[in-house]
Structure formats: structure tokens, C-alpha cells
Length: 253
Image 1 (cartoon, rainbow, N blue to C red):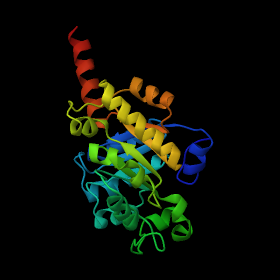
Image 2: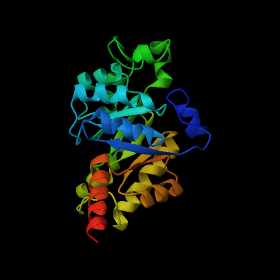
Image 3: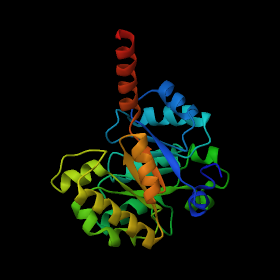
């Protein structure tokens, strides 16, 4: 089953997995290149990417080259930006630093229409992309809470019990950092790996999806084998930097 915004839940419930692209370069050109590359999912990063709202809108338009679901990692758990990126046509949000059930409830409130949430009506571009958008938004809009601190790890079950979440997303670098280790997208510390496994187990128990950021393709394959629904492949900037360096090294022998 090819993953789309319309079949997002069904794809994963039927055992499907996905490789997610991570775009932080504020460019419609690179966004379109990534969209045409064949990723199963596409995410624009407003938190650590160099991307503002206008760039998000333009990149979402360029990404229409692909039918893949398009998510945005918002810069913070703030209602205004969550609502704006969804109105701009994002199929979902990934929210950083969700450390408690209260944080998760605030996220859901901003991303979901009543009665589940308090999202304000005005799906300007989203309604152009999907018929009956508001009525179908419960299935169309994906809401992921990032579990990336020791505090969130300790409260993961309470966070995942919040109605309206689609899933959780592990930020291994911040999670390791908060546990006293060096931040990395390729974790090897047993305590960090165990924490990641605990998040996945809790997500499965709660009936939620689980994604995680990965430093390379081998790590994506490893987390999929572990049971994660999707892994994000590095970043567009990181991939571009490494590709340029490798090409230059080859040219110089």
C-alpha cells in the first residue's frame, strides 16, 4: 500500500512502514527534489531547520510533486504556528519537547477541531487539497508528540494516554543529552537504547504510532526491524553536505 494522507492510519495498521525525509533547507528547489526522490513521508523542520512560515508554505506547494504525506515539525508547542501550518496544508505536525500530559493536551487542542480540541476554523489551503476537510480532519491530520527528554520518558504513559494523539516521535539526540550522554542520531549507549525501546513498547501498548530520527540509512533499517513505524533519514542539509564532500574527494582522488 502506497502511503498517502488519506490512508495514513490504515497503512501502518496493516503492517506498513515508511522512510521519512527531513527538510530544513528553505528552498522550493530542494524540497521538490526530495519530494521526487521517492520517500514515503516528507517533513519540513521549523525547529532546527532554517525555515520560516512563508518557506513552509512554498515548500508544501513544491512538494505536491509527491503524494506522500507532508508533515511539519513546528518550532514549539505554540497554538498559533500549529494552526497556521495545518491551515497551509500540512498533513500533520511533529511537536518538540512534549514533557507531560499537560503539554500533550495543549498540542492536541491546537491541532484538533472541537470537540476534541480548540483549533480555530480557517483551513485556507488545506480545504483546497481535501474535500470535506473539517469533517475528515480527525483522520487526515496526524499529531505526533516528541519524546526526547528524561522527563518525558518518565511520563511517557501519561503522555500517550492523551486523546487525539496519532503517535510519538523519538528525538534520540536530545533524549541522550538529557540522560547525560553525548547527543547523537546514532545512539550506542545501552541506557539510551533501552529508553528508546521503552518508548516504542509504551506506544504499542497505547495503540499509537512510533517514529524516530536516524543518522543514516542503516539506522533506519535497524529501527524498522525493531518495530518502529517510520524512521527519518538524517536531514537534507546533512545529506547534501556529505554528498558534496564525497564528490569533491572523488574528484581530487
